[in-house]
Amino acid sequence: MGESAQSMPLWGVVLLPVALLLLGYWAAAWSAVLTARAAGTPALGALAAPARESARLLVQQRRTVPGADPLLWRVGGAVVPVAAVLAVLVVPVAGRAAGDLSVGVVWFNAMEVLIWAAVWTVGWGANSVWGLVGAYRFLAQGLAYELPHMFALITAALGAGSLRVSDIAAAQGGLWFAVLMPVAFGVYLVSSLAMAYWGPFDQAVGRDLSGGAAAELSGVDRLVFCVGRYLMLAAAAAMAVPLFLGGGAGPLLPEWAWSVVKTAAVLALLVWLGHRLPTVRMDRFTEVGWVVLVPLTLLQALVVAIFVLVGW
Amino acid sequence: MVQTVVFAICAVASVAAGVAVFRVDSMARATLALLASFVFAAVTLLLLELSYLGILVVLMMVMEMMIMVVFMVMYMMNPAGLMPMTMVHNNRGALAISIGVFVALAAGILLLPWPTPGPPAPGDPTRDLAEAIMGSKMLVMMVIGMVLFATMVAATVLATDRGRYDRYGDDLRRREPDDPIRGGVGR
Image (cartoon, rainbow over all chains, first blue to last red; front, side):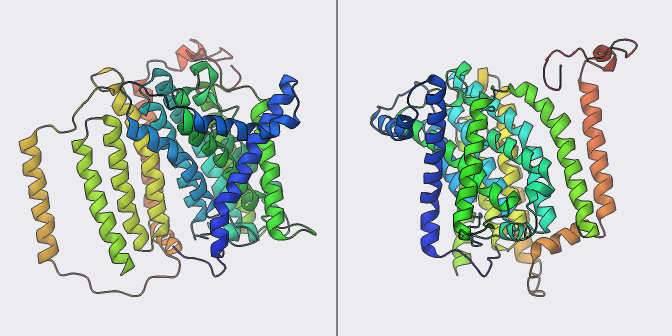
């Protein structure tokens, strides 16, 4: 676990989950504003909607289901926010990450994949048919996006010649990877939506299944599960900054501020996309993923590899 | 010292999770216990400073176990696998085999000479590992990869009951394939 010389000070490590929570709140509030605007209700009042909803869920009584597997059900929901926090440990802020692993990209992906287990367990543990169908849908979704997602991550690592996230951020001195490898960046954003089961990839928790994997969740369990989803979205947005958007590079503002601004912007884009696009059926998206996205990302990796070999 | 403690905790936890696989009465719990066992085993690789391999084991095992549990639940005798079940079969045979394997491995530990400490660990084990795998063995890896891929394609082709003549018509002139599930890439 090679740590780089510049690791984050301890207060930064403590602050990291708080920062992620704030970003998650920003995502939830922006989502509420978009919903309010679409419904024609005052958008300003929607800014407090996530806080109100959280308070409501905190005092709501837990629903019990006959024949449930309470252990798996509760553990599964708790894993979602934990995985998101673990994933951002490798994201450098102002050039320093909490744990700047030499294989940070792989670590990030491994923590993302924990979501597979978490959502499946939540859906299965509830002993509800809707939950089970939602859980199966989520695994099918995982199979559809995971390979393009991996190729997108690897392409960024290939461009920098390192799996260390701070190296990847530092390698974009002249030009951001979002410009050099637009396909990888686009696929990364799309798969980020899918990994956080956010629209248009929200079929696993879709309304047609009365909430799918989350169908039977109530009270604090639902709060943890939903907060975890926003944290995951925020983690994906935070990782997009060092991978494709030049990390903290930018004029005037200090590096950490640029990281935050870029993350918030990517997050806003992701949330907005989720609201704009209709839900995609997974049996259809699987074909798109394998027939279109996998070859596209492979070609992108080939182009980047050639560029790396000839030395840009 | 810290390494020894972490190793001991993970070794015990890994074995305990492995035991749990055969003690629980639910396919989901059995699968997740097996997953926990593998994750604890992956920590051993991290202790050996093989961070790439260790994290990769976590990554692959989570994906693999989640796919496996779906198939396991799907093929179980009771609907959706939600009824109590047991992972233990042929107890006597299993006991004989496991005791035999344990004795053989323990004898190996005690009888074989242990390797002396070699050169110090390289600075970047990931790079060394990649060169060890991809350097002289690249041709073997690629051939094996192609054979595996060809096997998968062949197995799928043999298993499916619909060929290209079903999809594109007898003269293969149909513009859009006739698939049971519509949608996807422009259909």
